Image (cartoon, rainbow, N blue to C red; front, top):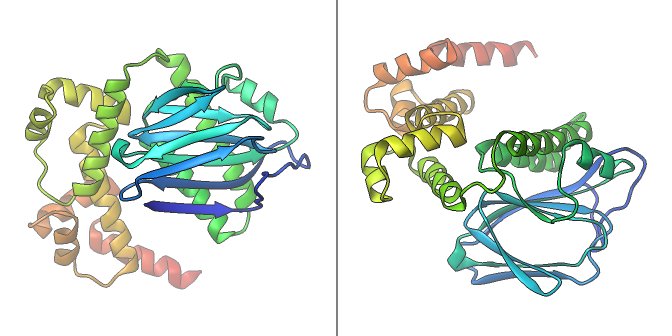
Amino acid sequence: MYMNEGYLKESLMGLKDKSRPLIVGSCGVYRLKTVTKLPTWRPKGRLDYQLLYVVSGKAHFYFKGKERIVSAGHMVLYQPRQEQKYDYFCEDKPEVYWIHFTGSNVKNILRKYEIPMDDPVFASGASATYAYLFKEIINEIQTCKVGFEELITMYLHQILLLVQRFRQEKNPAVNSYLQEEMEFARRYINEHYNEPISIEKYAQSRGMSVSWFQKNFKQFMNHSPTQYILSIRVKNAASLLETTDYSMAEIAAIVGYDDPLYFSRLFHKLKGLSPTQYRKRFVEKNETE
């Protein structure tokens, strides 16, 4: 089981603090790989709100004794003192982000973003941006840098705003099969981005036409599959340029390119600088700070 969590203030009952309009108490993620089952049951709920986002797979939630299977691309909102009972099963391959929050103006904020209050389960769409924002919240809570409390609140606002945008622009009853397939593709690319990936072979392996897959992937991720692969490679290459002394050829090979010159051209196209220029500028910036 993989887990990563950040706690600002936490207790078994949750946090109740009305000193500010919105306060994030904790945030984390669970991904089941080997553990057979991960159950949660809080009969009396918590004092704060909890929002869960199913990134991939599915999770089993129980409301008033009735089970609801929640698939990828959906969120679940628990209000204060609402019973919380849900299970993650390894066979479902679930990955779920969660966040606890409180404050003096939470209800109005949720209404502002048109978050449903009468049904705890709602469609949010499958977007890599959600996972990015949750990860940033976790990181900020763990590192506690200057202004982090304000920043994590802003990130939560962004998450709620993206939900509102999705619900206004798309049918909330969007096909769950489509969501799961696009999220599966995103995860596959993230795990194999530095290997040769044939879009045609991948689509065929999932029983989809190439055009249908490309069209829907771009709709969900705002990038074509090829653009998404390139963006991950360049992003990770930039990180290696900043944090290691690897040569350009070594970095190119790490992110999936046999030809360092070709890699350099792609990097320059996306970043506006060659890898050498990028590393030099990063070093100079750190020396002046």
